[in-house]
Image (cartoon, rainbow, N blue to C red; front, side, top):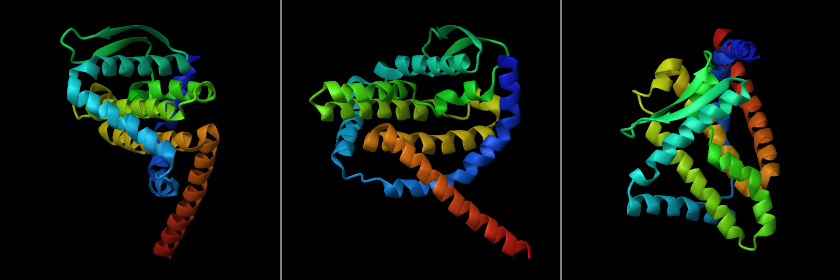
Length: 228
């Protein structure tokens, strides 16, 4: 099964990159629709601020090891999702990074997943509706979500660089397109979730579809006029 999935993903590699690239105008435009003055976003910002303050007070190395672990766990998560046999996670003794033992060739989603998928924030999002029902302090629930959002972005910023082996493996152009565009999706989805939970995510994706169709029609119209 894994071999067939890898083959399908290989065929879809550049079509996916092109789709993501064409979605960028709609993704950027979509941020205009969020009401950042809503109390939920203040709580989210508070959690982000707490993470930044924690890094300043305790030092960067406090979270560095956990960032490496979350990076390798994300590789492992997508390896299992695509039916691969993933083994142990290894951390370099010098703290410079780590590795995940994967049987088989793998695919580009496994390779690049840590740079666009917020693993801890995702699992918190799955549990967050329950936390909101059980807790009387919704500000705290949204604040913790903000903490995980900041943790994810700090991890991405730290680990995306020209010497990153994952990025080299999939190629700089492809990796840049996927990481930038997919993170716009990821950020929008997390903001939409903060706004209206999973219903907000549904509304957000529908908005992206409508905006993409609008921009796509404009691009097609311009291209037609250019070649006439």
